[in-house]
Each structure stands twice: as structure tokens, then as C-alpha cells.
Image (cartoon, rainbow, N blue to C red):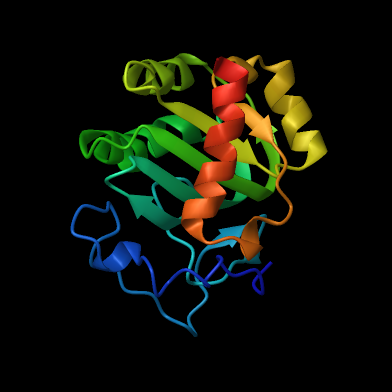
Length: 187
């Protein structure tokens, strides 16, 4: 797991550590000191902590004019024990919503499993962005992890999509592809 880095090809376009509106503004990362773990396996130091011991993320891109964020995730999403959704909502999502971000793409191909808990924070998240035409989309989540989300009825709040070629897109095109699919689903 230590070799899985957050996607870095857009860093010349956006860097959360340099964005004064980002919850990760000013965070410095080591390239050599591996300290965070998932399942006792070290993960790459470029992943950001947000209060969970098992789930980490990287804000890959934010567009404040188009009101969207692309966030990559890695680890175990554990709402049952760790209440990861509460940590994510309070530490990362709420500050973004305050900056009028209403559309969230969660690149989830490295979310290894999901343990359900309360649905309240998912419902609150969607309620917070719904009036602005907002949505939450998890992209490329592994099938078994998706199954656990569906079983917990979290799919009422998060839409699941596959887009295996997302890395070949510029962030604007990636957003446009997902946004157009959501417009067809909602409309």
C-alpha cells in the first residue's frame, strides 16, 4: 500500500496545500517519512489525514466557479467503529460547502471495504447541497465495497459510477463527464 500515491498529474493545476480555502492549506508532507497506516500497512505520506485512523484522502482539484471538488480516497471506510463519515463531513466537506462547493466526486478505487453506521451524516451532506443542484458521486469503487454501501442503503445519498479512464482527462473534462451523467439521472 505504501506505493499507492494520490493522483499527481493535476498538481500543476491545483494544490490543496496552497489553496487558502482548503482544509489542508499549509499542510506539509514528507516524501520519506511513512507514518500513517491502514491495516498496519504504511501508506504513502502524500495522503492527507482528516481524523480517521483507517481512511485517508487527497483533494485533487477544486473549482470554486463551477462549485465542484474531486477527492481521491484510500483505506477502510468505517462508520461502525470510527464514524468516518462524521469526521469527513465535519473536517473536509463542511468547509468546502461553506465555500459553495456542491458537487463532489469521490475517486474510491482504493476504498477497500465499508462498515456501515448511521446514515444521518450522509443525509445531512446531501441536504446541505441539494438546493444548489449538488450531488455526491463515488467513482470506481470496488464491487464488494459498493455492495456494502448498497446493502446499507447509503446509495440513496451517493451515486456510484465507473470511469476507469478518469486519469486521462483534465479535471474539467472529468467533472463534465460525471456532471452530464448526473443531469441525465436526475432529469
